[in-house]
Image 1 (cartoon, chains in turn orange, yellow):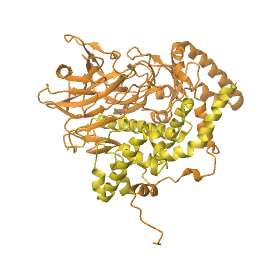
Image 2 (image 1 turned 90 degrees about the horizontal axis):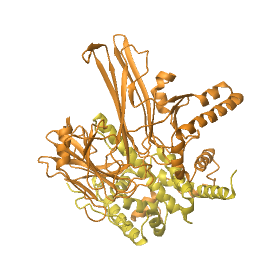
Image 3 (image 1 turned 180 degrees about the vertical axis):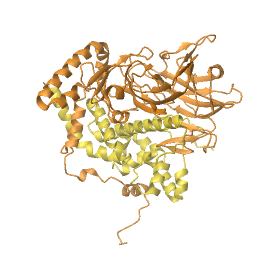
Length: 446
Length: 194
């Protein structure tokens, strides 16, 4: 080491010396010189900076306008045919189909084992800090009927996931392509379903270069959210993997592509910060699910502590003898999420509660646009007989969701299989719902 | 046809992009895996395009602030999808190293020490050390006062020094609650217990 070289003890100097990306200003090349950068800029410039104001107009004209858009596409396809041949036109025209319903039988005549029925459900994402929706798809394939509602054999499968509330920049709320197959003794079944939950301005989804699905309104969903359901393999001979690898394109009523940031799971500007916590520092053998043991999870802290951190929303389960809050997520400061289209919910706290071998996930849902005002009704929920003010929503992602209003929030209880071998039923959820005490402290008091 | 105001707006954005893209990209590269860098940079500039009239005369600190939020959103989305997978498959999920908010290029002991800082302390320190911002500029990027920033930076330096003096494994396991400041409520009365 020469006399001029010294080991610095200034932590900033130590960190500076470890800079993994040197100062880019030393590169004399223009950022716009690269074709990739140029495309990046042009993509951004093609986005209407004032597009938020157009959302309602799009929603209002979605159906008739799409027909006009189809003509535009057809004209473009004709021009492409002249210019580039039939292949290009086929790509542009593709197959455009109306959306299938959220539940039904797959239109697959070729499978020899039996028809496969499917069911898709959407429920609010109740995880603390989240503004979004979860979906679940179930498939059932039944062999020969034995009568009286019994079947020789029954096959089941499914998948689920969650996505963010829609924004102008991200009109897809959730999207998935699910497939599977099975069979025995030379007979088989297979299924492939592509489904998309979108903001109101999406009139169609290009699911692949050869499959476009027109969206349809769904009365179980709020604020004009739309769905598109299609069967890629049946109609186009494509595979779920191929379709799943294709980034779907949201199309407006006029046939133009809508700007999409990324898919799926794009997250809107969610209030910050949210703290995750858990009671148990280490994963025990009987904890089938575990968020990471004490420490850090994906850049976020997971605090190990005996109770939820204090935040503006709180859930007290002390009136449930034997129950224990195990883990959850707490928003530390509630802020509106104006970017989300529609009256979505902001979950300001969720807590996993276990009691004698069964578990529930409880949460407080606020209006995402205006926390402190009455949130929208729970979509698809129906009153529970004998329990005034209590509603139940079937087909939640991990089981049904039961809820009641508490002030300007929804207190919801969802079945949970995270921490227990048994999931809760309606009676357990009603017991929990009746015993919990809550506080939503947005203006200094509950 | 593009009107003169539209053209002017596009030219302003292109100038902003040309001037700031390398620094914003470097900022993201220092904190995120390569796979999401271009997405985060694009989203950052998309926000700038939408809010072009609100971009301050000194845009870099503002853009760093936007990029920081965008990165946080990406991490949150990823966290959620991994947690969901765990809920569905009932499998143990361990935190992938690549998702930590410091590039894997950084030497492990220093990286662990940086990760042991609170998010705010770490960001304060890195904005000065890696982005070369002045305290006033960094305070602007973080949306807090210069005085609050200086306190945060002082704590970051002290905590980093402590972490580096400890054994690497010990430093990596240490967790502290976030500190108050810059307008944020700090209600974690029991944070870090166990």
